[in-house]
Length: 258
Ligand SMILES: Nc1ncnc2c1ncn2[C@@H]1O[C@H](COP(=O)(O)OP(=O)(O)OP(=O)(O)O)[C@@H](O)[C@H]1O
Image 1 (tube, rainbow, N blue to C red):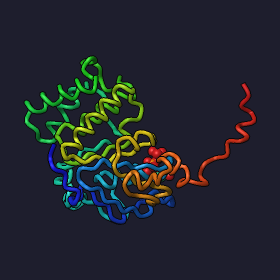
Image 2 (image 1 turned 180 degrees about the horizontal axis):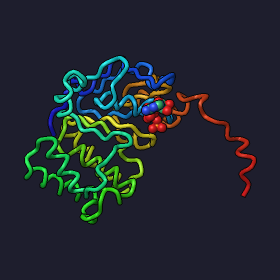
Image 3 (image 1 turned 30 degrees about the vertical axis):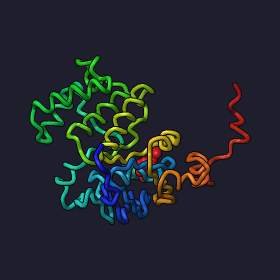
């Protein structure tokens, strides 16, 4: 296990903001993710998590603000930042007419990796993620969970220093989820940094050492998982942070009578 230096900032986000027409998706987000941490981003649907992560990784241009990966500006030194980063974006568009292995070959060669390394790593990733028993299946035929896993494999292929993963466990079966969590745990223990968004508070509480909650495009709480949970458990704290946005359920839906 390498020595983790929490003084090194893996991802720094300052004043990131983005609107779509009149809709303010992200108002102003500041975050600092120390190297060697597993950082969870939580928030209700439409809070601005995916928009924040897309801006932080050079996929969506912000209206204002900046993002740095290990001190490298994501927009002015985009290629350098991309080398340090592995990203699983929301709604990733995949080359549909390739098999999983072909997709990884394509990704690795685009990244300038040596073909022999690409082959070896692709085999390892397909095996670990349980995608090697469908070698001839095209991505177009993949299930939702398989698509998530091949996207994750593509993000890991070049062994980046920082992984930014938008809901990596969504639609993934429990066995694969355990494998992915184990793999990411090992990566973090070896000095890697993970930033991921999730709606599953139990998972965030289980794996993340730091958490930020975003509501209506603003960070409403950030700190260590214990600080944010504030003795109440993360789920209870999340519900209290989101507050009045919850819907009343006492009456149920009067027309929903089986
Ligand atoms: N391309 C776009 N065009 C218009 N509005 C957008 C676009 N992308 C995001 N939005 C809006 O910005 C807001 C934030 O969306 P975002 O996807 O970042 O939220 P999120 O926290 O990731 O949500 P979820 O948990 O549902 O995935 C939402 O109101 C969404 O409708």
